[in-house]
Image 1 (tube, rainbow, N blue to C red):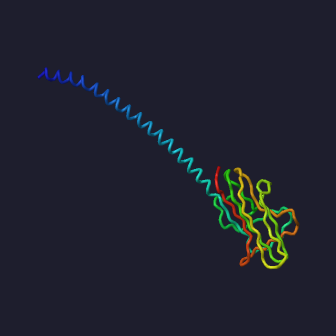
Image 2 (image 1 turned 180 degrees about the vertical axis):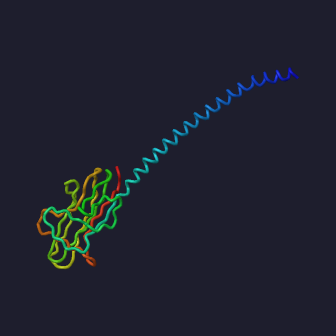
Length: 193
């Protein structure tokens, strides 16, 4: 019986170190595989986060109108479209009439100005002091007329855009009332760079 015990102890010592060594090698391989998987998942998560942040750039848009007002403007006066209908991101300021680009990219702007009989208004879209385009109406025949323009332009992050009266005359008049054509201004990010 002592011989059997001795043989059993010898076998255990002979077998377990190899078993421990095999288990340790297997654990090292598993840990290496887990590290690689974590690195792959981290890389995929960073790519998804970058895509998500780029998608977030698509949410810059506003639409505002001038309501229930007849206004006279001098030369180069910023028109303030004070009644905001949509302002995703809050980048249009209804107090000063200026939109600030939150991202570099291509933006679309559209505006309409309205006048009543015997008056006229000529306006222009300005981005960082550069005139992009103009729109207006001369109403000499009576009634209520509107002039509109839609433009696309590139803007850098932080650039400012606004509508102002032109230097053509000092007598610009907007007639914007319910049940008549209203003056409005809208802008939106079409493509972020």
